Image (tube, rainbow, N blue to C red; front, side, top):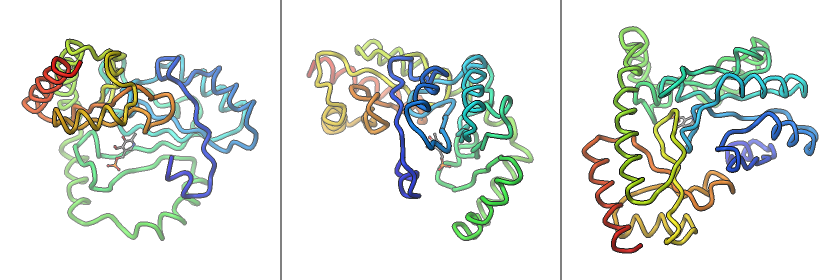
Length: 260
Ligand SMILES: Cc1ncc(COP(=O)(O)O)c(C=O)c1O
């Protein structure tokens, strides 16, 4: 969101909390009818912070609205390898001429922060993107280029192996959180759980996250930092070892017992 504003564009937030944190074609249509001069919409599937991924039917519906309104779709698919049910589908399958796909090795090959990603878009757009890119990023550091080469040459399936590990961690963390009273929609991708703060606690997600950090020594992200629809929720990541997750669950469960 900040990045969009930094570039002088205006953000229109759509609250999807009533639709299982999924933007429906109807909601998109309504938003576009209420807001003129929209240039592009952003979709992130599988999503951060909810772990929700869009199914084919929903994507087809969104694609139709995008086509009818002649806007672009910026599709952030960084978690495309991490799906726990149906395989990942890109909206580019339906509207390639209007989609800008963002992806990279951060999540599939645990290279977060290494600053290597890729973009797929219609050729005309890529030409313009290159103009900006040329002056924003001279080149990726050489050690990272070698790591990317190795990942793409000899480790193309490594992300799939990791997916099974993440799926196990998801079950472990989700059932641990459930026992502590945290309800969440079952994530179908990425590596986050977006959980409702149990009723007996403050629903101020910033205050709750701070309390959890200070008292239980567990770090989570307040849900409302992702938008208004996230108020009363926390995001917890399972991109850490099973040992760390077991410790975190123990601490959260003890916290709930003592403070709830
Ligand atoms: C939705 C989403 N897109 C893109 C990224 C990009 O990650 P990086 O900047 O490490 O490439 C992240 C990482 O947290 C993410 O959650």
